[in-house]
Length: 326
Ligand SMILES: Nc1ncnc2c1ncn2[C@@H]1O[C@H](COP(=O)(O)OP(=O)(O)OP(=O)(O)O)[C@@H](O)[C@H]1O
Ligand SMILES: N[C@@H](CCO)C(=O)O
Image (cartoon, rainbow, N blue to C red; front, side, top):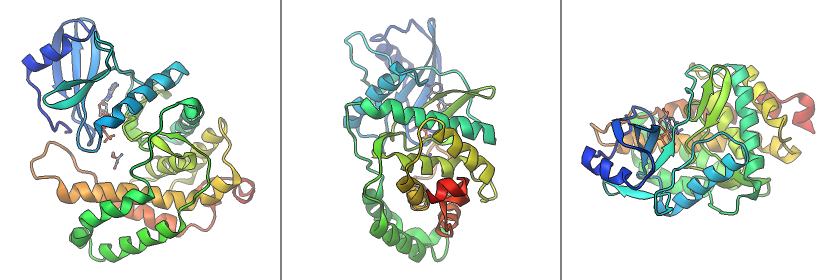
């Protein structure tokens, strides 16, 4: 359960007085997520999410995240909205952390997504990329290739505790990707963490995207690679090409990938798998025992890195031969 910072009822009532949300009737910590502390609030006016921003979120970046949610919602994308306080500010402070009240999005995330859901996610991702094109704020991706080595250096010496041989394998992978990372692909605002638990569905229809706290400016195709990694593998580690095909064709029904993006896909998929491997490894080794969070398995992403390493053509992800060789 991701509640790193606890709150008292008195503090919460005082904090909520600045918002037009009615009177608090109940609240509870949300037993999901690994990054921030989230609480579900019920008030006389409805339901809301209270988020306290934790370690990986820099308070200076919050105007980017909250502004982006507004920007995307104005362009018709379904995502939660931060509520303004009486003084017009979107951010307050609670229990010593920056905090925001966010509108409640109806829907559930899918524990077992099927190909049809992957198609919808592909479409929504491309719609977000298009809608983000005129978002004026900028935020570089702190967890792209330049951020991986510092992260690795924090866990490197203990990596073999998780699996023998990991230290050498990841060191080689990192050097390989640093030397070959693409430079000139189409860029824009990306979500950067569009995993199944950040996409809500009502029945089979996608009802919205949440958790924009890794959003940044980077290669658009990197976001596609993040989704291939998080939506198109089965629990046994195998890649499901039917899901890959659906996700890629859903994406391309809104925005076509360029030939350069297609060619770079295996490298981007390797890099994005390494990014999640590294943050998971760090949390695996560093999270103190007893913390109220379910740690995620880094080795799931080692399997994915190895899969991408063996890819010879982007057709193996589910693009047609014609698309893959254009
Ligand atoms: N606006 C919202 N409407 C409804 N439920 C929400 C909303 N925001 C968050 N939640 C609930 O809280 C959970 C955790 O939220 P979120 O994914 O933002 O947390 P996180 O710690 O940033 O997680 P992650 O590990 O994905 O980075 C979600 O799975 C969902 O159940
Ligand atoms: N979606 C990430 C957690 C947030 O960084 C993971 O599954 O590792």
